[in-house]
Amino acid sequence: MGYYNMPPAKMAADLNALEKLLRTLNGEGAIEALDLLEKITRNVVQNPSEDKYRRVRTTNEKLAVLFCQENCLAVMQEMGWQQDGDSLVLPMSVELDFPKHVVKILEAKSYYGKLKEEAKRGAKLAQDPSKAGVLHEMEIDRRERAAAQAVSSGPKLVAQAVVGMSEEQQLQAALRLSLQGAGASTAATTAPSPTPSQTSTPTPTSTDGASQKKPDSAFDFKRRGDAETKKKEGEMSLQDLRALQKEKFKKFEADPNAKDSEIYKRPAATGPGVKQEQSWYDWMTGASSSSSGGGGGGGGGGYGGGGRDNKPRMKTLRDLPPPVRQGGG
Image (cartoon, rainbow, N blue to C red; front, side, top):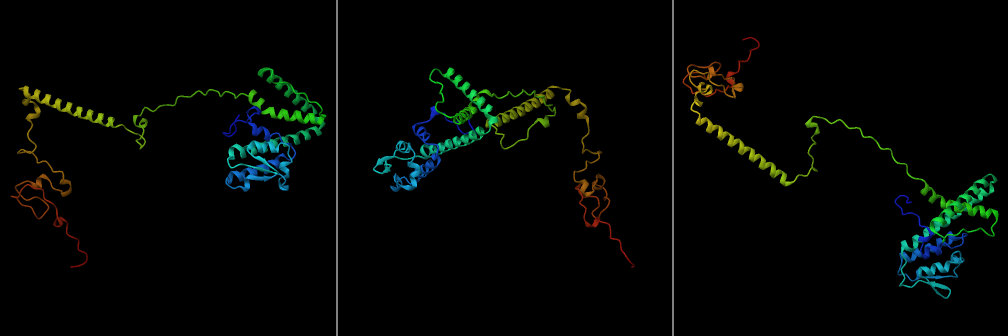
């Protein structure tokens, strides 16, 4: 299984030749040797044209930890290094890559670090006699998983018997193998529990049309055809109204008694004997029909008098009341 968007762990069958050789080093001093190999590889990756980083002397005392490993030369030759006397030379035609070489070295260091931790844990368990039963159960569990894999995959997988090992070494080996297979067995046997189906309760919908209508936003894209369609519909409705009015007018002309209706017998609003209609600005000027009618001066002002036209009279400062005198005199 993956972890934080990382690919699943590689099994032994997925390892390439370099990865397999990196895992054949001796457990003692393997991490220190890989540290030196990582430093040499990084120097070549960062400075591919520098010749000094492409030549390594095997007799260098600082690199003794690296070259004391049995499979060290095989690892470096797999990476492209060539033997030249007491030195190893990397040709200019060979290019080392960070993901293909440096990353593989880092993975091998992690592999040896896990083995070291498992060995410490096994030694601690072996020193406690009360945990011998736990180790025995772990060994039985490991054998059962191995038998199940042999049945499922065919006769290629055979049981490996532990020969020539002490009891403590057998306990450590059993613990290491059980810890390696614990992750796979847990992932295979543990299935995610199905989430209970939640019954969604219907939310009450409001009957108010204004509350259901969403406000317009800049992200409500509208097609140009919709606006043109609405415009055509508006024009059609206007034409229909005009046609309806024309039809009513034609019916009115065709009816001889239409002009005898009550609305045609009403007197005009501005005819003689009818109270003059007030203007819309009479509330500002205080004018009335009596003040603006012809035949006599209106009230309240210095511009009264008959004979004037029936225009509305505007009030001025003269229409204001005189100020109240204070004091004597």
